[in-house]
Length: 239
Image (cartoon, helix red, strand yellow):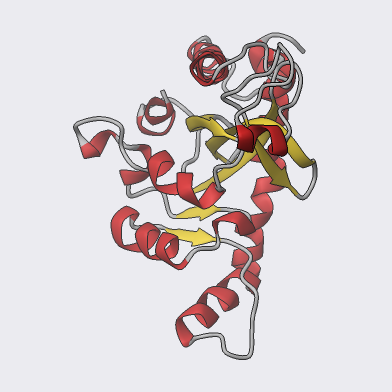
C-alpha cells in the first residue's frame, strides 16, 4: 500500500522526505513487574506475558508493545511501512526492516525509489551503520540530531553540519507536522493504546490491521477525488 501512494500516478504523496518514528502501546490488563518476570512468576491473572517494559522520554516506563512506522511528510501524510515489537526493542533495530523490501522484488520497496531523498529520524536512530546503510543501500540521507563532541570524527562532523544547516533543520522539522501527529491520530481513531488484545500475535494483528485500514481509507478518498484533505480526520470521514 505504501508503494502505491508514492509510485502510482495521480497521487499527491510526496516521498522526497520521509520520516520514521515509534510509539509505546500499553499492554492490556495488569503489568508484570520485572522482579516477577525474572523469576517467571505470574502473580495474578490478566497479565500479558508476551509484553515487555520499554522507556520513552515522554511516557517514562511502559509495559507493553511498540508500533514502528514510516510515513511521507508532505501535504498528504500517509503510512508507508509499519511493524510491531515488544516495548523493549530499540528503535534503531527496526530501521532496516522498515526500509527494506518485504517482497521478492527489491524494486517494489518504497525506499528503493530515486525520488526518496531524505529520512527524518529522532535521536533513537543515531547509528553510524544506519547512516551508511541509508546512503549506500537506499541512496538517501538520514537526517537525525547529531551531537558534536571534542573527539567527533570528520565524517560525523559532516552529519552535524548538515543537520544544523537550514536545509537539515527544514527536513527534520517535518516530523512534527507529519509522522508525530499521524501516529497519535491512528492510536486515537482505532483505540490501540492501551492494546485491546493480549499476546504478541494478537496485538500485532490488531495494530497492523489498523494501519492497513487507515491506508485503504486514504487510498479510497484519493481515488474519489479527496486528494487535498484539510485534515486526516477528513480523509477518514470522521471529521
